[in-house]
Every structure is written in C-alpha cells, then in structure tokens.
Image (cartoon, rainbow over the protein chains, first blue to last red):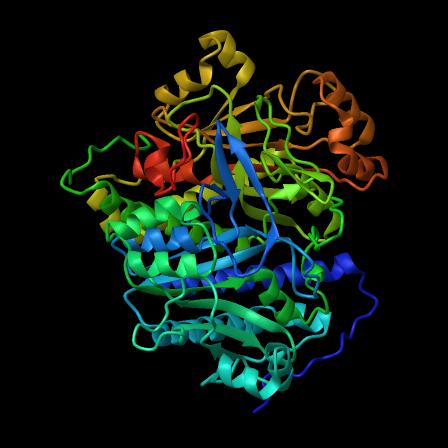
Length: 311
Length: 311
C-alpha cells in the first residue's frame, strides 16, 4: 500500500501568507493531537529551559551560542536530552515530555530541512526498551496523522495535500546494512525509495545513546524517517546511565567531562536510571504533513543557516 | 462568595520531588485545557522563536542577553509581543497563540514570583477591544480551573490544595485609583485583599500598549491578578499600530527606534493592524493552582535571580 503520494498544490492563487494560515492550523491540530495522546499515556509535560551550564553536545559542530550571567557561562539549549534524562530519574512518573526551542547555529549545513532554531517535542519514558518506545511513537504518529486528516480536511484541500495515515508495521533497517548497500548517503536514498514512515537503528553517535554492553560498537538507538525524501522525523534511543560508561564514551568522543559536570555527578551518585526516548522536530513534521519544499515555508519567522535574520 | 481559601498541605511526608510529580500533572492538565480552549476559539498556535534582532523592551531594566551570529546581534526573547503583533497582521486568522520561554536576566528583582526564565502563553486576537479580550481570558481561566479540578482531584488532594473555579464577573479596578488609595504597593495590597481573580486597568508602561487617542495619558491595557497575594497572572492590552504614534511613544520612553527598526518599517508601511492580547506566565499559574510559597517550587530546574544555576 502506498503511504502518500505528493499532490500538486491546486490553488496557486494563494499567496505565501495565505497558505501559512492553513499550515498553522494543521500545526495546531498536530500539536493538540500530540498533547492528547501523551496525556492519555500518562506522560506529563514539563516546560523548557533555554539556559543551562549543560546541553546536548550534538554529533556535529555548530557555532557557540552562550551568554554569561553573574560570572556563570550558560549554554543555549541545543536539546533537552540531558535535562529530560535527569527529570525522568528524579520524578516518580512513567514519562515526561517537553516542547522546547532548540538553538543550533549550524556551520556549513544548509539543506531544505535545517533551521538555526526549531521546536522539538522531546519525550523520555522510564524503564522501557527502545522497541517499546518505537511502538509508542508509531501510535503517536498514527494518532497525529489521523487527527489532522479528520479535522483539517478543508485546510489540506486548500493547500493541495492529502494526508494518509501511516501503515503498521513500519519497516526497520540497520544503519550498518544500509551504509554497505547505498554508501554514506543512505539516509537520503532510502527516504526517497520508501512510501511509508520507517526506522533506521544502530547509529554510532552521541555518548548518551546506549551501547549494547554485550556487543560493543552496537547501539540501541533509532531514527524515524519520513518517506518521499523528506528525511528524519525523530531521533532517539535507549540511554546509558552508568557513570563509568558515560565517562568512557565522553572521552572516546574527544569531549570534555567538565562540560557535563553536574550531569556526571548525578550519574556517579547512581541517580540516573534506564530510559528510552526521542525528539521530534515540529517544523519537519509540519513540512511533511503540508508537503513544503523547504522547511522555511512552515513559519513566518524562519531562521535559515547563513542567512541574515530580518525579524 | 469566596474564591479560594489557602488549604494547608495535608501530606507533609511527601518529599519535594514527590510533590513535583503532582504539580507537573496539574500543569499538564492546565496546558491541555488551554490548548483545547484556544483550538475551539479558532486561535492557532505558532512556535516560539528565541533569537531575533528585536524583542520586548520591557518596562524595567534587565541584564543584556544576546548573542552574535555571522555579525548580526540577536536578542534572546523577552516576550513574543512584537512577533505576535506582526503575525496577527500578516495572517488571515482570528488570533494566534505561542507558548514561549521568556529570558529576563533580572537586576535586583528577587521576589517569590520571579524567575530568570519562564514560559509564557502569549495570545493576540485581531480587531477586538480590550474588553472583549478580557472576557475571552475570563472564559479561558474558568475552563483551565474547571479542567484541573475535574481531572486532578487526586493530585490536588495529595498536595493538599482545593481548586475553586473563579466567579464571574471578575472585579475591575483602575491602577490610578488604586495608587491613590493604597500607594505604590497597591498591586500587592489589593491582591492580598481579594478572594477572586480580578483586573487592574490603565497602566502607563511599554510603548506598544494602546494610549487612548481621545484621552492622552490613559491606556487601554490591563493585568489579571490572582487573589490571596499571589499577584499578577496575565499582562496585556490593546495595541498601538500606527507609525507616528509608535515612534512618539518609543522616543517618550527614552528608547532607540533603531532597536525596533524592522517592526517600525512594517508600521510605516501601514502593515500593522489593531489587536488586543496578553501573556500569561505558566509557572505563576501553576504556583497559584498548587499554592506554592515560591515559584521555584513549580519546576525541577528553577532559574532564580542572583542564584547560580546548577543544572
């Protein structure tokens, strides 16, 4: 069964801002659906924080974004990963989620799906495997797509797109096999080939994603992808939480443990816990739902790498 | 009828983080209720932006919080006021809302209701009066309180609070009369006296709040307050939108028009429109619902003025 065929816009008379209203309506419905789904799943919402001595190191280099407050250097949030891992350990709750701006001042990355700042729906659930988390995310995506299809038929018609709810099961591929088959551009190639949402597992990347303790060099993480070339939807994994493992992996990646001091102190005191989670880019979700060529078309205030910011 | 009496916590055996779970559950319900209400009102959600050449000047001084990106100076968002006024003018929509982190590096303000960063629910509706916006906000508050009361009875019992839905009509006071009656601390004094949510109108403050063109020195703005000394809940107003008026008011306040250049250009091109709106602090809402002494008790990651940030 095909997942979704790209429909050509039917109403070319609409100006950019006129289409944006429909895009924002679709975004509103998608977010409302996500809130309702997570509430039913007893996953509670936390507010984002934007300034902290620690943040996601990412697995690629970006320009520094930090400020000083009363002699303390504070990083702008690149993602809420470390804070959600801490929260999930401190709170007696099944899971938490946060919708937060992520600031990533990209260096030399200029694609149709990158913004310097974007909003991420970050979810973390305690004491579950990555497989279980992936099932939860499949249900979430199906719920979001169904709600948008049901409540936004007029908006979809106006901007000329048709929503198809994803089919289960989602295909699952290993990054290592795909790399052998397609080379280093495997993500883009397979995203263009597929017609339904699909997973790629087992990436060697940030220190916090769990390495299989019985099979070093193998990772219990995953990315969810959109088909038709739209690329990454969600990135996540089970988490490492034991101090010696985290310290070793930070050093292996050439990073400075001091950059994560308060987080590592909690790990050392055995106050972190097993969890799995992931983060989904809101603008990328909206871009896929509304079939925009460039992610800048999903917002009135796009921050595009290497372009001046006008407003 | 009394609005709400402060109930003493019944379960002193709960530790801080144990109570936080219930506080976060109440926060989740309050936010879900807000999303549902605004969706029914056809007010659409936009994502926040954290970096821009322009931001809210505020009506008090804070430490500078900005970064440089490719030679451009970008302010961290103090509020989304200017962007929501621009959005409401560009989009053919009844209204918009944004939940955004606001960064305000306070200088010398250290109370039980200030954080250096907090989340604000910012709403702006086109072509309506402040009176109509205030009615809408009363309905929103009643909906939020009712939903929390209905869905969080167990959490409220555990932390020892009882939710009472506000009574309509909310009292309305003029800031000028209150100041005559109570002196400069009139806000704190009347917030302690009242037992229901109430409004204070007519403040001389930021340039964007509308000055009555027929009665200069009188302002079509308003703040919503919690009773029992909990202070400000929401701050808003009708907006000025005409270039000569905005320019005059910026200069009267000793501010630099260059700091608002792209916004003023839109005003000069007559691309801004009449609107009214307001911003509600999420942590202050949660503090009132859960009757915490200090706003820091509403979050795992409090950023308290003049305190180092540990996580």
